[in-house]
Every structure is written in structure tokens, then in C-alpha cells.
Amino acid sequence: MQTYICAILNTYLVPRDSPYFNQQDTDVISILRDEVNLYSAQGDMMILIGDFSSRVGLKQESLHWEVIRDRDTDMGGLDPEPEQEKPIPFRDNQDTISNTNGNEILETMTECHLIMANGRTTGDLDGNLTYHGVLGSSVIDLVITSPAMRENI
Image (cartoon, rainbow, N blue to C red; front, side, top):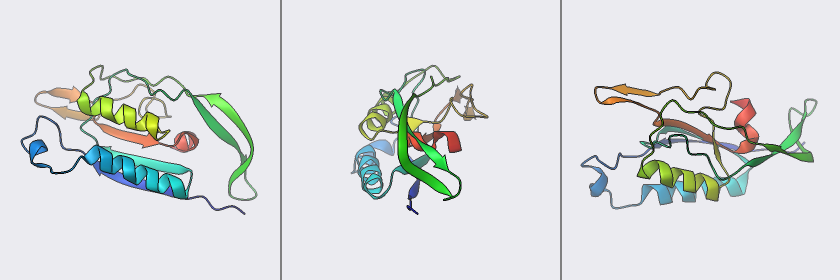
């Protein structure tokens, strides 16, 4: 029986227009990228969830195919063989605006072979709004995952 690791990272990114953004002495997205790479080296499944202060609008990830492994119910896990490629479904989003944080998150997702679950999973196929405030509504609370985990969310 093969063991798989699923890392779950809770994330908060300071909005760029916040006075606290310029007080940061570190590049938080670089740290996030390093953490993703660290956990990716240990296993092939990952979930990042939280307030990313990142608006991606209708932009899609550059990763278009996911590798799906056949389920092995007797083993209680994923059987590494056989593998097949399957197209990643289009992601919908009720928030059509993107920002700099969103663009950086999309770049990081592409580099780290991750996809966004918002707008493409059961219960959220419309990409529902996650934040409502006096200045408007948006999708800034994101779920980012390894492609193999998408159907389990």
C-alpha cells in the first residue's frame, strides 16, 4: 500500500492597498511558493485555502491537463497506475475583476502545477462571491489544489 501526503496550508495575504503591505519585509508569495515546493517534494497532493486578497477574475490557469489516477478502493487510496490525462474544466467566476495579487497567484499556480477549485467544483460551479463589504463584493477567499485533489473537494 502506497502512502500519500496531503498538505493543507491556511493562507492570508495582505492586500496591496493596505498600509501594512509596505511594512512587510518579506515577499509573502515567494514564501508561499517555497512552502508549496517543499510539500510537493514530499507528496503529490496539496490544498491551499484562505484569504489571498487576490482577484483573478475570469483568467484561467496555464495548466490545461491533469493526470488522473484510477481509484483503488480496496487499498483505500490512489493507485499510481494506470494514469490518464484529462482536461481541466473551465473555471467560472462571478467576480470578473483581477488584480496584481491575483496575477501573481496565477503565475505561482502555473509554476507549481496547481489549479483553483473555486468555480469548478460541485457546489461552486458558478464561482460564488466570497467577500461582501461596503465597497462591493469579490472572490478573494480561494481554494487552490493539486489537480488530483479537485474531484475530492
